[in-house]
Length: 204
Image (cartoon, rainbow, N blue to C red; front, side, top):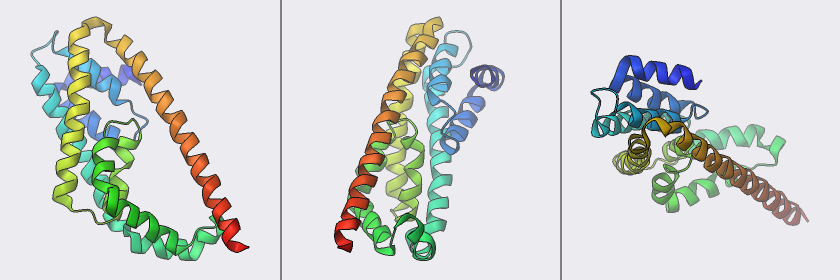
């Protein structure tokens, strides 16, 4: 995959950066770390600039995030509630669970959108609950842009500073991503355990 990514960027420049980052937001398995650090490295070998790469990457991030936001807005909490009402018993879910999750996002959503833009995988998926909860689009757009700009600036700048050693940064980011994935998995398991345990107690 890395060879395909670097080939597109080498061939299409800024457009390639923006396009790949937009796709990365829609398909999280595509590593933004490779795109951004290689983009930084390219500034030393081509006419591309660090600022230009950061702008292209941020624009791509926002486009991808907005697409997911509107997918979430189309699904909406009310529609998800009806789906859970029909099929949720298979997972022991109830419509009120959707309402609770929606209320949580209404309270903490802005912080979640901003901070999750700095976390691999979650940085893309956070746009869906933002849309589903009906979060203000201007607020979502602002926070997404800020978070994406921070993430992109750090990785592009690092890629430009290390030059041909950019792949070593990708290796370090892989470690960071794996740690995040492990923590997310533990968090999901812990949340599922607590959820089903509380359900069992409530049933008694």
